[in-house]
Length: 93
Image (cartoon, rainbow, N blue to C red):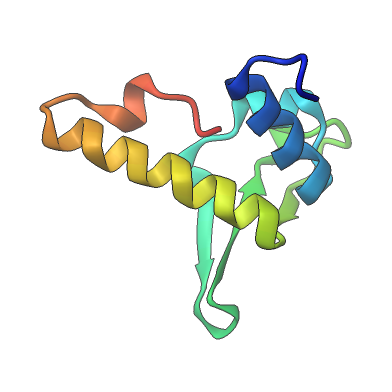
């Protein structure tokens, strides 16, 4: 993967570690995130309209995918403190 730009490396690594298709990774939205406090983890519930099988799908984040999600969340937090609407302008991954 070293031949890919850094942002694409993160996308590929995220997809491989949560089992998502590239289309689902590219369209992933923060609004789909659901916290699972018992597991100290998040999942993303992809709506049926956005999933190939036309049914809701849960993406469970393993340690690697959760780390990538946390890194992106921290970058978005920095953007918000600078007056930018990070969730509207930034893709999830």
